[in-house]
Length: 301
Image (tube, rainbow, N blue to C red; front, top):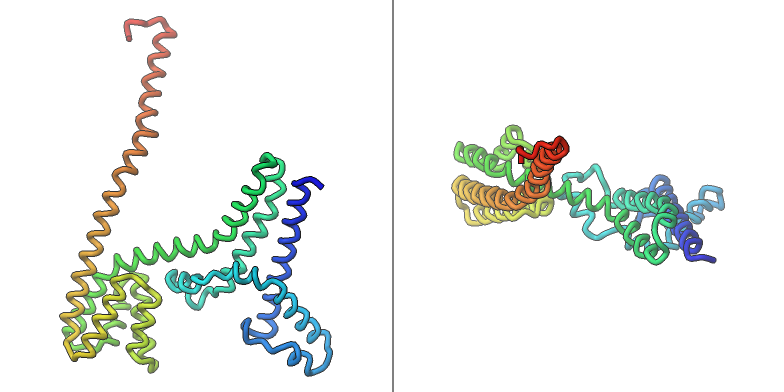
């Protein structure tokens, strides 16, 4: 058996195992409930050896065949990334795991092309890189979405805090101020403040709602805001001056970030100019020179 045949067989076996685990997991969740809360095999078969009970018991055994795969697919920080990306309630960690498995299956389907396009000595490294990159693609998308949301949140935070300071100075309570700010600010800060206001309106303690805000958005500005609010309430200090100071600090941090971003853009612009515009100008000049030489018009030179 050649190396290519062995690798093709191994890829097919891994793909079949992934499909089996994914189907078993999805069927268990659909028929029984959230994974991890399903009954045991004895509980499933207690009502009699029906076809569905036997199938569910078999599915549980299939899911147990690949515990290592489950640990590899279910990354520990996926739940945090989902919260940072603003997808709570829309996306679950198991959905990301399913997407990673799907990407791995698609990459495994492309492996036969690698066998014909690459030399044999490069195949093991190429297969590992392809499958690992495919598995990380959904997590990479989540990180990019979380980073873009973090930038938008830090950009909208100073104006939101200025509006909150005005509401607090007018005598409004913190919950009402958060609600008004959420109605007049841009995303994602509007959604986050509206979530805190709704949680406190439904009876959740304000400290718990603020801790949730800091947990969903681990930016230093948000953590500093939550800490300042809790400290002001603990000591009985007025919130308006505290929020004004937080708005000032958030605006300074935003200005520093803009300056740093502009400083990083300079070398990138120089690289683009040196690799595209300058060669294009030289090529245009060379074309004129070559045309003059072809005509015999050496006076041009």
